[in-house]
Image (cartoon, rainbow, N blue to C red; front, side):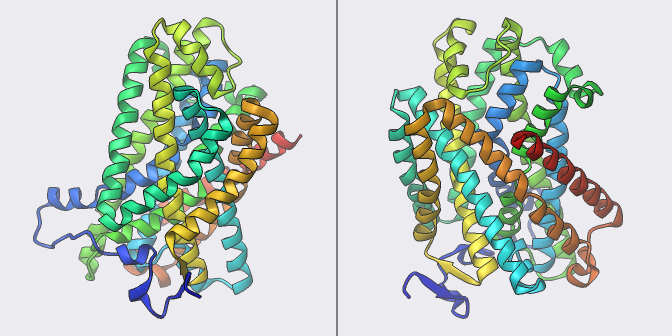
Amino acid sequence: MTGILDQQRPQTLHGLRADHETVQVAAHWSFGRKLLAFLGPGYLVAVGYMDPGNWATSLAGGSKFGYALLSVVLLSSLTAIILQSLAARLAVATGKDLAETCRENLPAPLNLFLFFLAEIAIIATDIAEVIGTAIGLQLLFGWPLPVGIAVTALDALLILALQRYGFRTIEAVVIGILALITFCFVVEIALAKPDWSAVFPGLVPSSVILTNPEMLYLALGILGATVMPHNLYLHSGIVQTRMLGSSPKERRESLTFATIDSSIALCFAFLINAAILILSAATFHANGKTGIAELSEAHALLEPLLGTSLAPILFAIALIGCGLNATVTATLAGQIVFEGFLKIAFRPWVQRLVTRLIAVGPAAFVAFAYGNEGATRLLVFSQVVLSLQLPFAVVPLVLFTASKKRMGALVAPRLLTALAVAIALVIIGLNVTLVIGVFS
């Protein structure tokens, strides 16, 4: 079977293991140079926290309730920082990603069940990327939605072509697109002129969020769109592209750099998500447009409300950029899940094309049958699916990193474990509430 390679021949694997420890980190380097060498994986992870699914929930929250839900964006980002630090800790301590660790420590039936759920999460993520990118292409170039969806079926193959130039090249492309997205939002915020005296109080949690059912529902949607299961598998895999060292001192130092990398990147993701909500609040809520639910609707209102044709163009460019970047992370996460859970590796283009075509199917059907409104509904539903999968990635991660036997000297401190357990319980409870609310 030419498409599948046995792990017993690791030198022939086409997956991410070929990139393990390919980014040099020398022991004699200065702190600053080592930190620069470790910067990169965190930004690939951060991409998943600002995909088109985040746009839908943040735009709706900002238009309906102004700046009040900024505190939810902040708390979701802090949760992400803690969980991603555990993913990095697992990789540095064991030399294995989360999927590998599940395969080696869990019963085979449970392992296959978790693999199945992880694949569903990646497909759900892909659906959001397909729809978001297609809507962006429609807004920027006027392409019909089905045409944009067809184009997105192939964009992942272009991303895979970058892998032959090294993992640093992929990171550079992602960071470059992030810089473009940042520029777009800096200009958008400057045009919107938000009321900063109202923005900063919005970062403080309010009891109103819990007592107002509609506000709570949107808050849960923001959380569900922010903390994504595939990012935990992704981070625990791509951290290993760095030379982590073999001594306890080197491993601990590597964990420090990896944690700094992901924490900085996720703070950056918070700023982007906050910018989306602030833009929505300053542009739509401030002008009485409190029912914005579709990306295309938001795009159409930007020019008349802000008084310039530049605003909708930048909005569309940023949306396409987020969709393309999220394609990279879904591609890499898919490779990690296949290689880790099943101990086999498809050639990346085969694995990626199959996953993308599965996602294109429902997206194309909904676009043809129901247009933009149906596509937006499917995008939001994909976030609900991700919420359902989240506990099945978080719980194993917390259990593994709390095990002294598996983690050795890098076992998670008890306080960190207790905090992670509390976060896991809250996420599970809130996401169950979200799912019940959606289906009822």
